[in-house]
Amino acid sequence: MPQQPSHLAPADTYALGARRVHRIGYGAMQLAGDNVFGPPRDRDEALRVLRAAVAGGVDHIDTAQYYGPGVVNELIREALHPYPAGLAIVSKVAARRDENGAILPFDQPHQLRQGIEENLVTLGTDRLAAVNLRLVDRTAPPGPRFDAQLAELVRARDEGLVDGIGLSNITRAHLLRALDQTDIVCVQNLFNLADQSSFDVLRECSERGIAFVPFCPLGWPRGVQNGILSSGAVAGLAARLQATPAQIALAWLLDLAPNILLIPGTRTRAHLTENLATAAVRLDPAARAELASHFPPPHAAA
View (cartoon, rainbow, N blue to C red):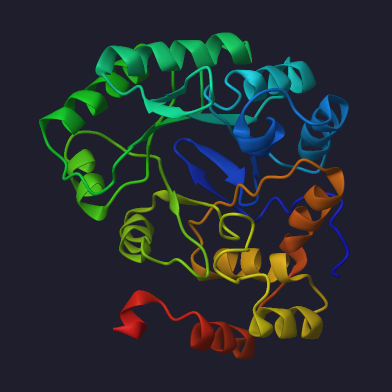
């Protein structure tokens, strides 16, 4: 395995709105209990993971009030507040959890505003680096309802509650419609070696200089259903490049486009170390060709 860098390289950054952040961040979702509901399995370790991430150079943390609900934001506050200068905390709105943990829409304009304010309270801050409007149904075409949701986030930005507006679980049509109305600083979509269905969204973001943040970068559950981590091709490259299969999958994303920002999540410092060490993994042309043959992008498979 490549030696873990003592600190993420300053040069390996990309713009997140007006900020520049390291391309390997941290997704805090897994810090909540099973099914992202309730308290963590090990609260002390959860706090250690957050502190170790920032100590290792992570300056981009992804969270949401409905993780827990409230649990993850409270952990972030306990571990890191007062927040170090330059730490970008990004959240998302448009969903809530009921008493049984079910995820329900919470996406009326006034509910989006409530979601932003709840994030600010539990995180103990007066401003978020960005907030993502997470669509419940990405197949629904953009229309007046989407415009009203977006307008509410614009108001929150204009009032200084957030620095930037992002979108999550969207199509290219949503992105283009949003860009006709305001600046978008990031897009967060499902994207990994085995699921490249958002390739057109990634390409649009790349052309426009918008950060693209893939969630479930190893698949969901972690590389199991789609065979990323069990792939013989990935395992073979991991052995040749002295990396782990997870690092190969993450390195592929970093190598694919410079505007990709990773937010891999974990509950343990050991796995955090593995994720950060991805910064030292370099794919050569043979590795790129091998992965492309086993996991072809949509335009290549057509």
